[in-house]
Image (cartoon, rainbow, N blue to C red; front, side, top):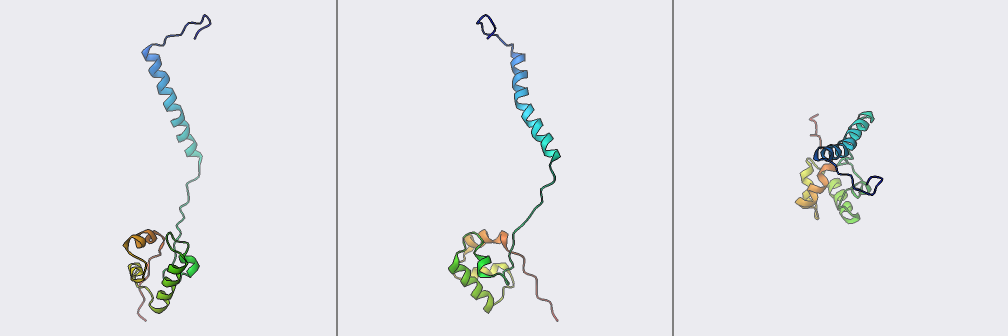
Length: 113
């Protein structure tokens, strides 16, 4: 509205310029601010399947105290040679294994002495 109570009419070009500025300014600011930020450090939480304690197993998604004890008991009797062997533990199927997999450290092959 102008001072006389009349609406100011924008031309299509003016409207387009305003919309473009409204959309581009926040984008440019985000890019500019991101350049000032230090690179993000990647941190990955992993556990060693053959040395993890019951408490460590419980930090993984879907692993409660009973299943953590079952895994710990299994690993003390039969050390894992591959993470897929976790599916041999009662209560761990394909779905649960796939949920845990990103948090498992690869098992190194035993060296021949």
